[in-house]
Length: 133
Image (cartoon, rainbow, N blue to C red):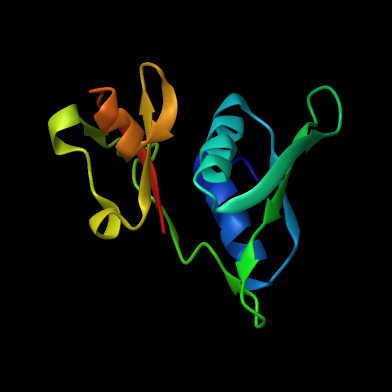
């Protein structure tokens, strides 16, 4: 599979692992998947992530979080916004609010990948990568 959209691939893997109630999921490690995993961890959507494998075949092992005794996934939805065929950019004034601030938008800015809240605080716009709630 020649997936050139590593972000969509990552979101799909997390989505599938969540639905199957897996404890962890493997995502190919790239700079961007690392940054997104970091944001997800900081926002409390995933428990932890670490790298495994060596050389080119490095993977991120992402530990998922569930709540309650029937293990509801913390992540209800992951939605890719900016796709390779249609990039979505947003300046600092029109940064999206996900579900009125309940969810987060992950933005790729000139100073790295961050949440919409963080980008607003730093007065930055950028490419809207995905929504998570």
